[in-house]
Image 1 (tube, rainbow, N blue to C red):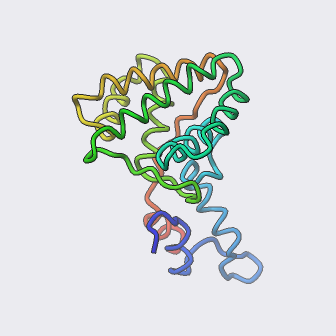
Image 2 (cartoon, one colour):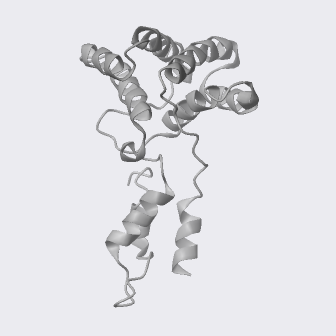
Length: 190
């Protein structure tokens, strides 16, 4: 079983939102509830900017397949500074993958759920867009993603990306840390 499939424990446990007409469990409501609960946990709940970064990271990780399409999407989304954003993003991805022991978990393009590392990377870019007041959060996320010797280089590349995205009007959202699904399942079924 894939532990990233957030809806599976709910379906297996048979808990969730009750249908008011029958008193039973309404599957569609339960799935909708858990999707809202885990906002930002799947590619379908990401903003356009987050989707672009995730999709391009997954393409880069698996051999830069059809990289011309990535360039086209960056050009479409960031017409004024797409080259700067793409170069900074490629540099960040290169730094993340230089050491075999420190490679982040970046999935393939067919995977709908985000890994912890993918979510941390998107959150790090969003935090860096918030400026100096978010430096503590950025430092913690950097320590999760890469060895301390490479953190300054990665931060510089991601700061360049964050600045370019901000100048283009693409603000990545800071998402609240999702509450563990098991706790919510207990609360809903209780």
